[in-house]
Amino acid sequence: MNNVILIGRLTKKPELRSTGSGKTLCNFSLAVNKGQDEQGNKLTNFFDCVCFGKNAENLVKYQDKGSMISIVGELDTYKYTDESNKNHIKTNIKVQTIEYLSKPQTTDNGVKNEQKQNISNNPFEEMGNKVANDNYELPF
Image (cartoon, rainbow, N blue to C red; front, side):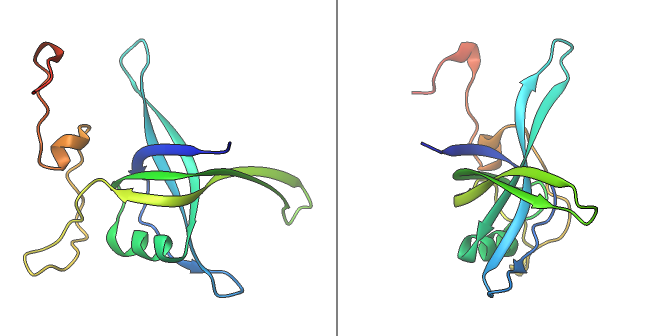
């Protein structure tokens, strides 16, 4: 089984591209929180991802740098040779499903706002819900 499920933030504004056959795609990098080290410094992993078709078009249309998303996909490894004739092996995540976990930034008239988003480390707070964590008691 080859399954990858990640939640993270886009590291830059996604850009739409087309293949030679006219297929649309979007390459993007996802920053995923890994926790903290012994000194309390945040640790982050970065994953290269690619999506195609409507997933690519909608990602570019509705998300921006810093947007939190959830992806489901599979690891994809391929070989290529660069201009200096060196062989390389690259692994990325071929995304099959994307869920948007942070609201798109819009102005009062509904147009997408290009200003920096207010980024929180608590995804529930971004969705307008606060989770009680008093002594780790559940709110129900």
